[in-house]
Image 1 (cartoon, rainbow, N blue to C red):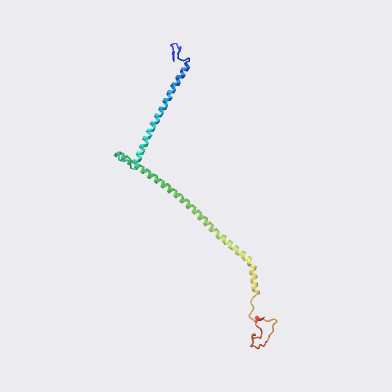
Image 2 (image 1 turned 90 degrees about the horizontal axis):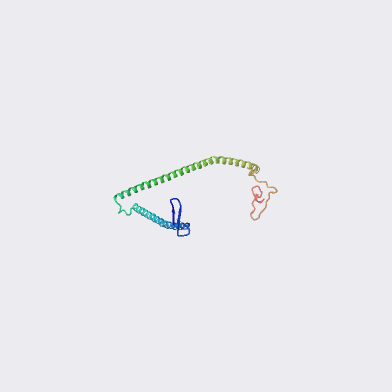
Length: 207
């Protein structure tokens, strides 16, 4: 296909097909297909380069880790060993600083807990003292009320007991009068199996 513009701006078209538009569409399809085919190859190339770079970085880090652990030190020069030593000293300082800070944090936490426990202990002691100061009064009041109630309730009984003791005093040791009994003299032919008292009365148990 051929497109020509004259000096006066006239357009001249020459193409092998019947339409110039179809020729242009076919050209665009061919051109874009070629560019799309080239794009994946470029992307693959970039991905491979990134892979190579990351692989080299991983190998370097692994080698540095072995050096920090004291391995594979023979290939290192004196300057490299000095740098490694300085790096280890800095790492030790940072580790010790972090450890000290952690211990200080734990100490502060323990002090805080100690203060809380002391405050709780003081509060409990204060409550115990208050309870101890109130209980004796309550016990005294309860005991006094109980004694008063006991005295009030047992008063009539005590009076009755006193009266009973007054009415039922033991009699004097006098010979009891034998009501309905008279002196009896019984002759016992066998020597007197039944005895009499000195006054001629029967014993009290015989009544």
